[in-house]
Amino acid sequence: MTSLSVKNFLDASKFNRFHTVLLLWGLFTISFEGYDLVVYGTVVPVLSKEWELSPIQAGIIGSYGLFGMMFGSIILSLLADKFGRKPLIIISIIIFSLATTISGFVDNATLFSWCRFLAGIGFGGALTSVISLLTEYIPKSSKNKAITLALCGNQVGGILAPLVVVLFITSFGWRPVLWFSVIPLFIIPFMLKSLPESPQFLIRKGKLDDLERTLRKIDPDYKKQLIETEQEPEMKTEKIPFIGLFQNKLALPTILFCIVYFMGLLMIYGLNTWLPKLMETAGYPLISSLGFAIFLNGGALLGTIIIGILADRRGSKALITGLYILGAVCLALLGIKSNIFFLYLLIAIAGVCTMGNQSLLNAFVSQYYPAHVRSTGVGLANGVGRLGGMVGPTLGGMLLSLKAPIGICFIAFAAPGICAALALLLVRKKHDDPTVIQSEAELTLQ
Image 1: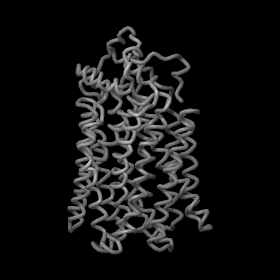
Image 2: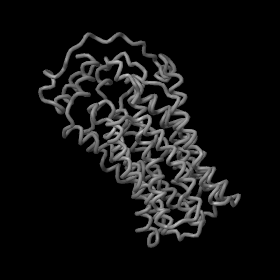
Image 3: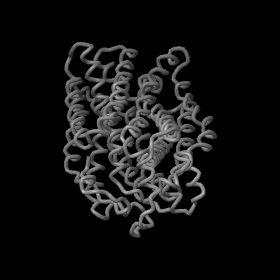
Image 4: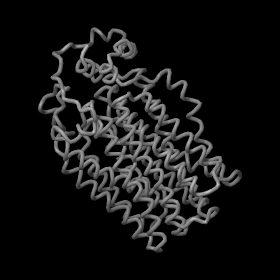
């Protein structure tokens, strides 16, 4: 049993109950990660008043979580490639759930900021490991749909957070909204029992019995389906997977992906942190402003499912590029006074083109890298992207402190979309992974 024969079997398998359960665990993990990420933006108007925070201070606190996410994406993804995806997913959930729950008990901005930083470490580790695990197990014909659907959890959490605020904040205050994050800790025993480990990791560690038990869940007659091929050429794998991202013609795509993630996450976290406040500044009441946040995430949720299907049928690169440009246009138009229904439509489309597009980008990048550096590659791009995510909340705080016109604020969040599109256009066709036998036609980047 070689890693190549197992990969070919998994790619050609039919989507069944095993894949559904794996997808649901991914959706569950990303949903609570999304909730914990977005929840700060929904309570920041109340926190600003209670703790007398300036817009810049509030923006910096929002950046602490993203700073932690940068560390989590890079460091925990390295550990996932070395020690396995499953334990890193569990550890990441424990970290972000505990940190967010504890933040609901603190009474000053400094402790709150440290909790956001620790939660961010968990956010980064969970995201990259979930993407990598889905990429390895989901059949090739459904990879984009499945990964983007799992990453819809970001939008599920983004919708849930303002809804919980609307339901509880008036009667109980902002603290119970953060305590809600304790729920995943009670679900971890069930995840430990049913979540599989990476097949490539099990092969590397010689745990073939564990792998066979998992393959049997996909197809009881899996041995008949395995097409034994000649052992793939021995690959030079570095002790530090990070080095592999800059070998074998991967250096330029790695740099370009980092730029795309930086720009894309600047847009996403800038909007998630400041959209309610921006709309409140524009004259809308707080409840209506939270409604805009729901539309932003709701549009992304529905749109992500659609673009995931389109990507499996038509290819990803051109679609992602076009969505970044469309999103930039919609964000720029938000700064112009218009009909309320048109405003909601623009916000929903912007959600698709920012958060929804980020989900598709993660699926695209995870399939671009070979298996031995997949978590590391996705982790590095996400980690560098968090720098953009930190710039977004801080940029919004600075613009509000300077009393910049609302139109200028939205243009500042639109411009990175054009930069992301330009960087993505420069990414070459997919790197030829020596562990996968493909035709020249298949090597053309979708």
